[in-house]
Image 1 (cartoon, helix red, strand yellow):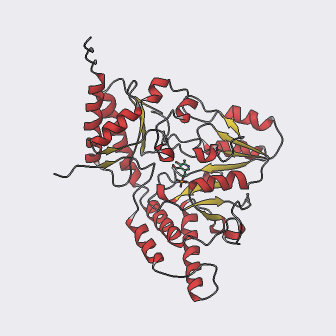
Image 2 (tube, rainbow, N blue to C red):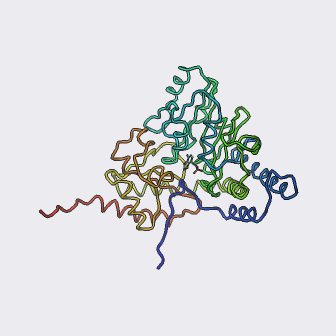
Length: 375
Ligand code: PLP
C-alpha cells in the first residue's frame, strides 16, 4: 500500500498550478529577449506586458506600476530600500525579508491579538517630521491574522508617509485592491498562489516611486535591471489569473480549517488556536499544544505523512522561537508548542482527517505520564 501524504504547508509554498506549468512550458519553448527590437524580441515583450496586466489585475492596479522582481523577498527590499525615505517603520511581526531589509528600522508594536497598535503608530509618526515609510503586512504568514491596513494607510498618509504592504500571503486568498488597502507599494510572490518560485512583483501605485537596487539595464521602467524572467513571469500571470478565478474556493477551505480547529480542540482541550476569533486568512491555523515542542510535533507528523511547519519555516528549515508569537506576548510554552497548518485549493476532508488522526494520537501520547526511569 502506498503511504498517504498530506501537504498542509501551503503558506511555505503552493503546488504549481497546471495553468502556470503550461504557460511556463510555452514560454520556455520560445527564444527572444523582451528588450530586442526584432520579431522574436517583440513577441517576448508582448508576453511580458500581457502578464503585467494580469498581475496588476490581481490587486486592481495599473499595469505600469508592476515591477517584476525575483520574489517577495526582493519586492520587500525594493520597497524599503528603494523608497528613499529617511525613516522606516515596520511592524514587529513582519516577515524576515522586511525586518532584515532595514535592520535599523523603527518597530511598531502589536497587541496580544497580533494587531498593530494604531495609537502607538500615530505617536511614532508624530514624534519625528522626517519623511517616512510605514511597512505592515496584509496577513501574517504564521498566524494568518489580517491587519487593519486601510486604517494604517490613513494614519501614514495623514503624516505624509508612504505605506508599503507585504501582501505575499494574502494575495489570491482574500480579495482586495490597492485602493481598498490604501497601499502605495504592494509586495507579491508567485509561488504562494500557484506560480513558480523565484518570481514576484512590487506594485507601485501612482503616489509612489522607487529607485532601482539592481542596476545595469533599463528594464522594468528603470526600476529593476536584468533580462526579464519570461517563463517565470508567464507562470506568475497564469497562476494569478487562476487564483483570482478560484478565490471563492477559500470559503470551502475556511470551513475545513474551522472543522480542523474544532476537532483538535475537542480532542485535546489543552490545545490553543492562536488568533482564534480574529480576522484571519481562511487557510491558516496556528495550533499550539503547550508542552509539546513544535519540532517534535512536526517530525512525528512527518513520519505519519503529514507535512506542516512551525513559524516561518520556509526561511530556514529550522525551528526557533517565533518573533511573531513573541511580539504577541504568547506565553513561551504555548509559543514553543505552536505549529502552522496551512491549507490550499486541493485540500479536502480526507486531508483534514489524516492530520487529525496523526495529531490527536500524538497529543494523547504526549499527554501520558512518562514511565519512571529504573534506578
Ligand atoms: N513575505 C511573506 C509574508 C512571506 O510569507 C514570504 C515567504 O514566506 C515572503 C515575504 C518571501 O517571499 P519569497 O519566498 O517569494 O521571497
